[in-house]
Image (tube, rainbow, N blue to C red; front, side, top):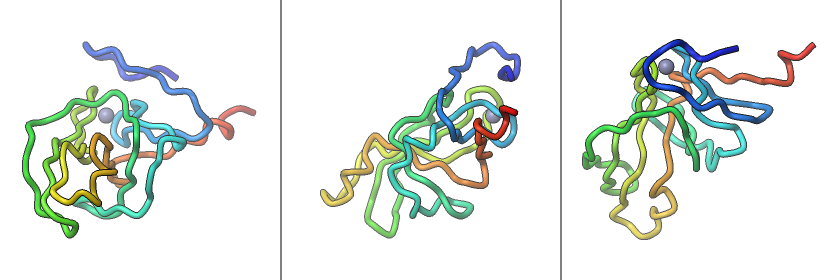
Length: 120
Ligand SMILES: [Zn+2]
């Protein structure tokens, strides 16, 4: 399977289970890079990832979350510009600092692909 043709070249991830863009199928993250599954995005459940590829980042913005003020940037698919979530740039509370430089991606915006099943 090849990524959707476009001006930007996209990185192909290795791994048994991948999270891809629900709109265009571009690889975003491996299930091995999930830090936490207990997160909440704008539109529902979300996962926290330590590493995400094939995204563009927006302008820094402050957001009031249940756990205090965080500076975040919006994360979008590099191919189709689908909104996926955000990256944490800084956190006001020291006990939230584990999130900094990590990515929150909303489950609704992604497709889970099990590569083991696609091989007959
Ligand atoms: Zn996409």
